[in-house]
Each structure stands twice: as structure tokens, then as C-alpha cells.
Image 1 (spheres, rainbow, N blue to C red):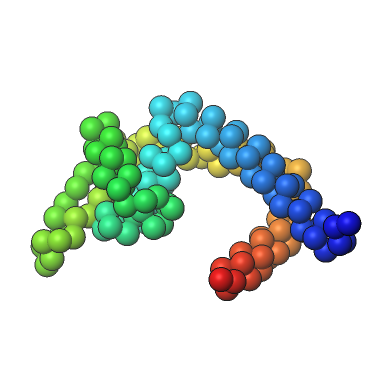
Image 2: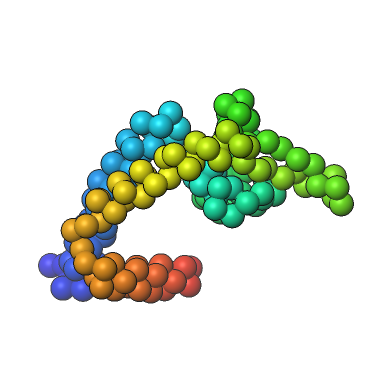
Length: 147
């Protein structure tokens, strides 16, 4: 017989997984409606909100493998949304920055995207959102410590 703690852990994992999948699928659908995939949107959102970034660091910030980063950057560059710029101090470093066209796109779609996120998460109060964030961070930090 499964112990209470194990049963609760399993149930929590299933609920977390289903909640994530449901919300992530709806977010991805919203992003696709703008002609982007979630990775492209993540890169554009980073550059839009944080400014020019070394390409080598973008992958880690948007949780993307470095091998895929070049492909995504190439796609966004072909669409005219970002540009590459070599670092004047270190030839190994290439920066990616958002273009005017990319900035205009994000100014149009980002507020709409925020509205979608707000609607998706209206099922919990602001206080509950704060509590969820605290608890999920606690779980994550604990799990990271385990080997």
C-alpha cells in the first residue's frame, strides 16, 4: 500500500503536470496566432524587455539548448525582428538586439499576450498567486538540491 506522503506527492505531481500542460498549450496557441512559436516569442520578449543580449546567454535565459539558439536567431533575423552585432571588445561574443520592426511587433502583441495570461490565471486570487509562487519556488529550490 502506498503511504500517504507518497500518494500525495504523486497526486500533486499529476495536478502540476496537467495544470502546466493546459496553460502552456493555451499560451502556445496565443503565441502561434502572431506567427511565432514559443521559443521565438521568448527570445523576442527577452530582447524587448531586457535589451540587447549576448547570444550565448539568451539560450539559458529562455531555457533553450545552445544548438537550437542559432536556428531560432536565424529565423528571427530572417523575419526582420532581430539583428546581430559583434562585440567590439571580444570577437567571440555576438549580441542580438531587437529591430524597430521587432519592437513594433512586441508593442502590438505583448499587451494582448499579457491579457491572455491574466485571463488564464484569473481562477486564483492575487493572494493565492503570491502563495503559489512562494510554494513552487520552495519546491523547485529543494528539488535542485537533491542529487
